[in-house]
Length: 83
Image 1: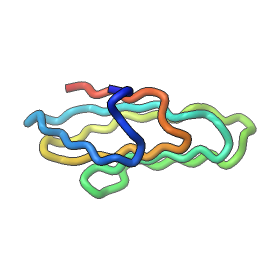
Image 2: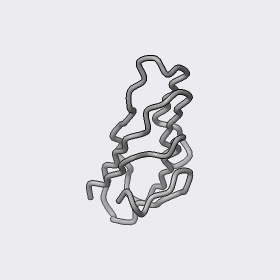
Image 3: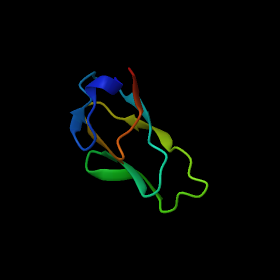
Image 4: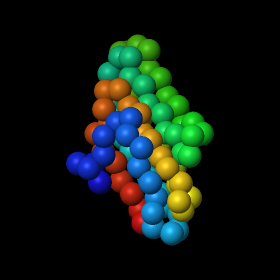
């Protein structure tokens, strides 16, 4: 769903069952990423130095009828939803 997702935008799980979202963030100095599910930050990552920076990513379960936001700066490179 990468092409249809924008960093900082709220999306909703309307499937009636839990879904798994996963994303991969950029790799550069001063990279930040977080995932918020129904208002609760469940993942947060910061890279303050260019030395040894790697990409970030995670998988998060979003319960049915819950919202999620992926914040990533620079923006994420891939977003997946397992429904």
